[in-house]
Amino acid sequence: MCQLLGLNCATPTDATFSFTGFCQRGGATDHHADGWGIAFFEGKGLRLFIDHESAAASPVAAFLRGYPLKSRNIIAHVRKATVGEVCLENAHPFTRELWGRHWVFAHNGDLKDYHPKLHSHFLPVGSTDSERAFCWLMQELAKSHASVPSVAELTLTLRELVPQISRFGTFNFLLSNGDALWAHCSTKLHWLIRQHPFQAATLMDEDWTVDFADINQAGDRVAVIVTTPLTRNEQWTAFAPGELKVFVDGQPVG
Image (cartoon, rainbow, N blue to C red; front, top):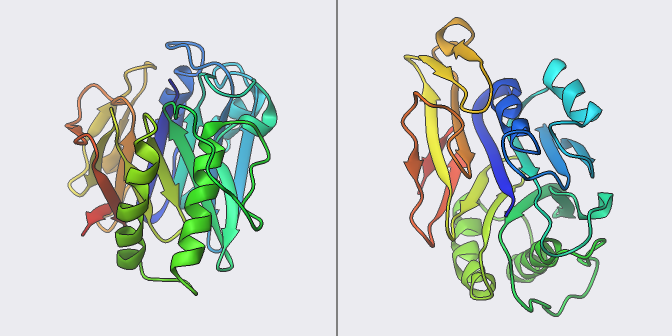
């Protein structure tokens, strides 16, 4: 199985601390060594980095750990290949354009015999069940709304669409359009909010402690969503199986 990491923030924030611990799971402290990727929204723009090498050994991942990029919505993924070969086109996150906006998606799980009918420009480049699911979601969202709907409307539509995919297997995913971050749990996903008064946190997979009170202001707030908790001294909340949550400005809404 793969692992997911998402950050949704009230103000532009760098993901260095979380990404550093997360990368170790890509071949060092865990066996998710079949590629990785991370996407940063910057306004209407998007920076995407993917690699078919393990995150723990990738020079690109090492570069990003030393050159932090700030964003309000970040999605990262480390892959354990189950469907589709280990190659660049099968590395998550995947991206598509809809309503003049970038959309980013990453998936953890297996969808058995999942071959939805796809048309228009929402067609997979690679061979994963994950990218097929993303293309189908984008296709159905486009059919459901003529123009950009509100976050609340999108959430309602996703609540109708997601069960049509999750009946094929495990469908843990993260999805963002730069305004919000949606997270769905089939089997395992956790979240927490970092906000004032900030405290220190210590990574599980790396010997690193950061006191967030030293680097954050009172108005800063970050929601962190991850497959397995990243830190040993923070209170993580587990998603319920089948739960879909949406995060805006660093907190859950709706």
